[in-house]
Image 1 (cartoon, rainbow, N blue to C red):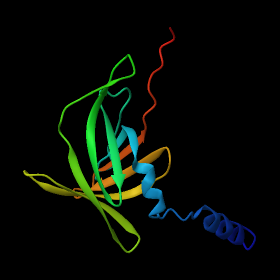
Image 2: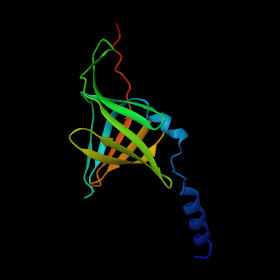
Image 3: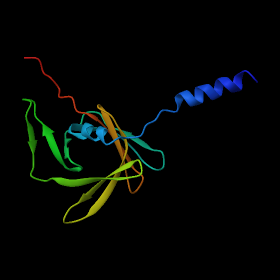
Image 4: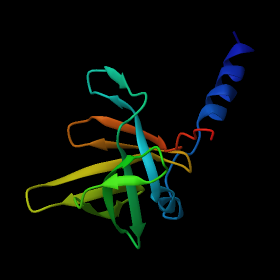
Length: 140
């Protein structure tokens, strides 16, 4: 037991990774994203396969917008003029995306972010996980 305890302690400390998001990381939000899964507060998870629509996010100086896009087979995108504007605010080490439209206001807490994925949790405790969109390439 004396030998196992230090080994477990070392493994525990090693597995504790600093997952805090920095201001520099926020640039990773720019680009095309598709939802990969949704986790509900009760533990239920819904996974997504092929998505008919994706999100385009553009962020500059903590102000940005999100727009729904539909990829086309020719490599172009079909979209509407609907845009969700947001601002990024920081409290301690947590970043929050604050959306405001003429109809409502809501927030999403940024819980993970890197160059290929990100996750946000809304006010109801639902976590949305996204992965960077990779267009389907059809050989000609």
